[in-house]
Image (cartoon, rainbow, N blue to C red; front, side, top):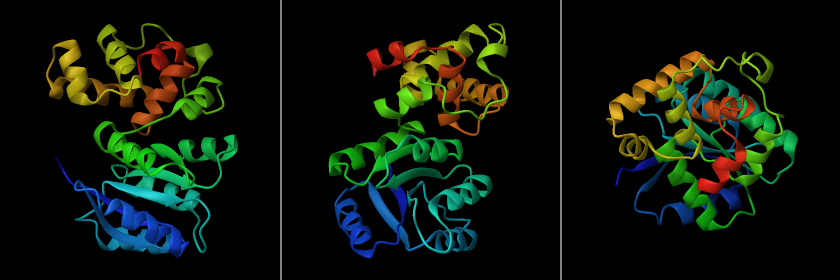
Length: 227
């Protein structure tokens, strides 16, 4: 099992140390740094560009540089680093804002330890993880960010195979699982995924899911029935 390198960014020392204690007990997780604000986080990443984390657990409300602004900076300069929003707020505006800025998942601080560990593992293996709440917000059309919209979507814009791959991505399958299901190689899946990112002008895998649902390439009912 590959080790998942994580940075904790949260200004609440007691909470941060509690998360640290919990995650350090997981054999496949390594905490590489703790930041008490977004400014500390960005400075650390800039100094350690040869050893970036896989995931950042990002609190939204922090001094000096809050989680939303820090996410913008990190996502722009280090797009391969996956960000899980970690906050006390579960209202739609907070969720929408973070997903638009590139967060791959959204965790509320009263989530169970199992939920947190599951989310981390899902994001590490699949690139994103959205629960039913987030999927429904996407379905409601509240999250935008792609130039193509529902009204302008062309059915011929994506190939049949690209649509198949996109649907399986939305079902939150990993690259290997998609390859096995379609009887193609993982490298071919990666190629289709990269084409999808280019065609849809999505920032990341999470953006592909938003694109697919809002353009009705897949339906929320089909996805939730299969997850």
